[in-house]
Image (cartoon, rainbow, N blue to C red):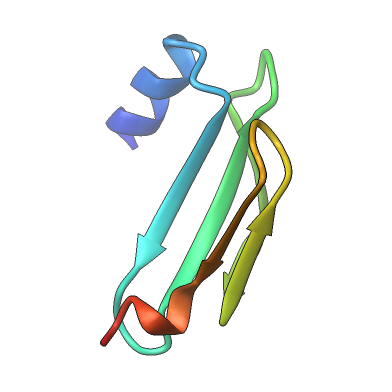
Amino acid sequence: MIKRGEYAHAAIRHYWIVDLDEPVSLLARRLAEPFGYQDLGEVAGEFVAEESFPVRLRLDELAE
């Protein structure tokens, strides 16, 4: 929780938490001033984002 607060205070717009336990998942969070981070949802399999840059991650391949 401390790191999240520090990142929000530093105005880091996107914060992703990757859980490498099976199934590999990613929790995407977006800075929502003045409240800190807003959860955008947890995904497994494939993560796709367009903000701040386009990216596509095959999460299931991270466990290999």
